[in-house]
Image: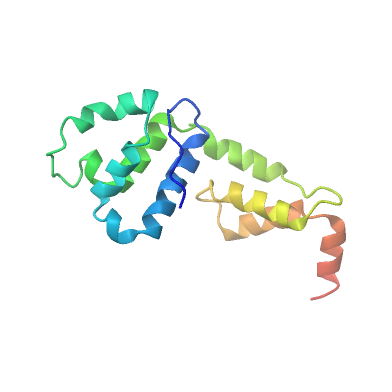
Length: 151
């Protein structure tokens, strides 16, 4: 499995892909990445630049065993990484993009579905009905017609 790309903290849109790359590694080899501390320390080895400067003070206290200490909690590390280096408007941007997402004429349904799912994954509280409504809204009329004729 491919290692995560180094993350320097200068491009907010890369936080999510960095975290997901790390999670793939963890899920592929769960025995090597338990407890959370191993996940956090592994991920830290790919931080450079501003991101490495951010984590440096925590690394000077590696003996801290408090479960709520950043280096001991993957969830805390992940949320702090998003807070410090992620796009604060990511959800609003994803909502706007999802609201205006339309399947292109002659476009592939798989591309529309992939784009829709990617954007929907960034929005936490829209609810299933709203997502279904937006999905249907973006479909081409020819597909809607086909669906309507096959109940």
